[in-house]
Amino acid sequence: MLVAKLEPDENLRNWHLYKTDPEKYLDLCHRIVQEYPDDPCAYGSCHTAWLRVGRPDKAMEDIETAIRLRPDSGNFAARGELLYLQGDIAAALKDFDRAEALDPADWSEAFGPVYRAQCHAHLGNLEAALRDCQSINDQHWTPGIHGMLPGNRAEITAQIVRIAGEALRRKS
Image 1: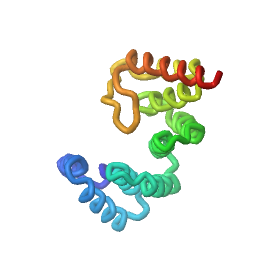
Image 2: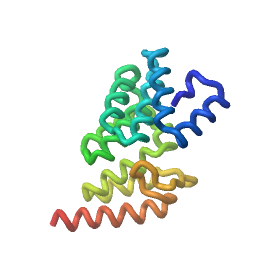
Image 3: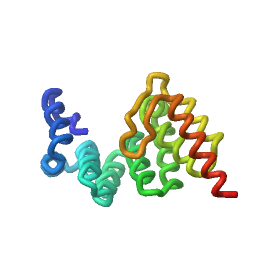
Image 4: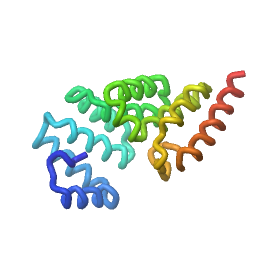
């Protein structure tokens, strides 16, 4: 997310830092927030760094600030992902719905449909989950980071069906 202020080669170095030394990356993010306190991208980067170092409470603070500064699709989706990871499925669904409403094109190209499908599946709402699975890009594939189901659209859909079935069995 530091992309807004940096050159491509600098972004690549920072991505490497994020992967190899998340504490240093977090320090870098804090310096950028100090330099650009009104930049929602800086807070979004801090949010990501806090998640990497295992501090979802601090991640929530920074994504809330990013949303206050710029209530856009990406920020609502990021908060939805965090809420999902924290188990607040209903709140996550609201943020995913808002993210889609703000930018439907970006929504369909990002990870939002996978996360929202997972939310619906955990609630036993298979029909809504499958609608989201249908909107997953044909070229989509993920290793399953940040609580997201791994695989391509077909593999994710199969997992969604299983999760929804388990949720429905628990309800009855």
